[in-house]
Length: 356
Image (tube, rainbow, N blue to C red; front, top):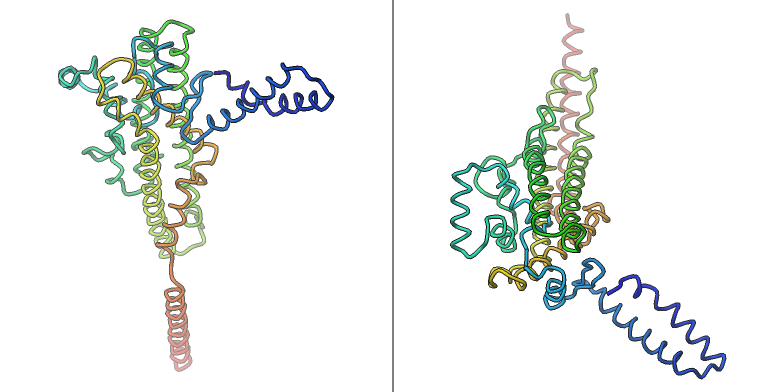
């Protein structure tokens, strides 16, 4: 379906109506107006939340995806179409040992998959958090304590650096696999290559946003002042460390919420686990992946934190973590008492100095 063609029907309808008002009795004009009205109704239906655009085709459900696959991907290849979740689920295989690869190949074959990557892509639809950031190990979301473990700027370590190194190798591997699966210039090859490129760009934008968010959260306590006393500098360092921990706790909630929404959008792909290799499996994978790409674009357009899915999470977190008015009043009272005690001590010291 030509998407451009359904974006401009109102002008054609207005032109047709104008011809009718001028007394043109042509049946062709009436037919044109009737078809445009139907087209406008279809365009409205096609732009629902679940509809996605694949090439020039509007895909609303698995049946539409299957129709696209039958025309463009008759062999039912599904292992080279990626979104953020399936990318992270398959990326670790780019650096695993030969013995682990052999084990994975045996397990994939036993489960009815043609290869390890196909198994990982299909199985990714049943996960909320990709294994690379949720399995056992030190670099997992739940075990990370601060923004420094996300990206260690001092030695360029952290989870982000590890994933970026794997991603470079993964991109090269996918370019080869896509070239083997589809002919140059074919619709599925263009789509697969676009998806890989868009996923890499999305990860880069997400990482940059997280870095920026951490900087904003820590900016007020990270400022250095050489005029501060040693005790004040020590207190400032402690506050900065706590700010980094607080920022990561908030980001952890955000990341889980975001991947949870990806899981919701990709849920249709779970059906691929209950179908044999072929067109039906490819259709389920393709639809789930396309819906994830739609969410990617929404998140980037909303600068992540302003997206309708995650924005309420930020508000809820800040509400629960806020200091109540009673706590603020109590702190103010305690500070006043400290100031009073200081003045009393200072007065006593002044009296002692006078006696000397």
